[in-house]
Length: 511
Image (cartoon, rainbow, N blue to C red; front, side, top):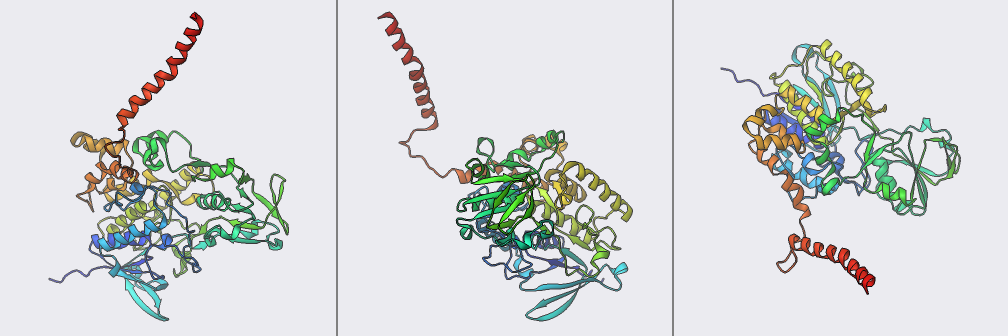
């Protein structure tokens, strides 16, 4: 009997999405080959002082906006002693641990650029792809049964200079936030930061510590969220629960950003919020409210554009808005053997969403899951567009935004791994309560179905311990007061504070 040939899958990029894709392929018996054009894993999270064009660029102080329990891969919790919000260097440590634990490195070809991804002549029947790569100045051709594009969307800068009259006459300097590394070069300068996304808020706050003045220019208002929520808990572990999502359906969605520092910089006057810039003169910025301010530097925190230069016949595969079925599969392909991983903007963590996408994709690649017809996929895409117009503010990023729990459950339903709460409330009430009222952590999607992980239940029931672990760094000696004794000390102080003055008053009255 002839053995079935193992399907060969190309994975483009070894960032967080690429690592999850490699592991998902291995789980389903596929053979992945990952092409990474740099010399290391990590993608966006790997800090470089001078990033190359076409590669992600981050600033030195970048810290994750999602907490570790919400950010982890679904079957590999982040170490309990790691801080809840990790600096980029800590994230890199975690990614290296993950890659080593699951043996992913041997499947990655570093310093290898993908030049062409093209349908084979017999694609309608085979679904195969010709992939041409370049390493050490030499090109090599491969044939793959499937392609997973994990190259991310933080590489091509969106720099809309045409929208800002006079910028070519501006005698100061301007950069994109992609180029920003640290605030040293902004000492004593007057700076305009354009854009109030997470990067704009971070950069404005950091620069304002050394600049003479920072102006943060935005077309619309925004809610600013602090990473630390009530009772010292991480914000996302408190808000992103299944219970809160049910309640949240009755409320509108606003533009929100994460910044611990920005409100303090605003209230001290170091950052001034301004309207959109109408035009630039040689030495100043004129805002739409009619005010004019002298400025030395402009930082465009205006986001990024999607770019897949290696795709042959790109326009036949993707339209101008990169429309895809559930943000993963181009609907018009004869065979569903091309998938895009992590090309979306979840209101929440990226790792769990991209990992779940990969787990679904490999089941489609193996034929164990089927996609709807092209017409049904297009209809579903149009329904989603209409829904998103109602939920999110209009912006280039808005068309790819998704609510974290909703999207995770949507893909989990396709895969067959969405938690069955009704069944759990009957058979495992303790676990069901934590799943419903506790944070919607990625481990929930490893309780059942394909890729089931034996450690998922324990990971969920111990997640609050891992949240608290890095905060318990001050070990009390026996001689120090315990919380209960401190409580009684406070009670005695209150009694003294309230009653001693009363006794003094009475003594004065009756003396």
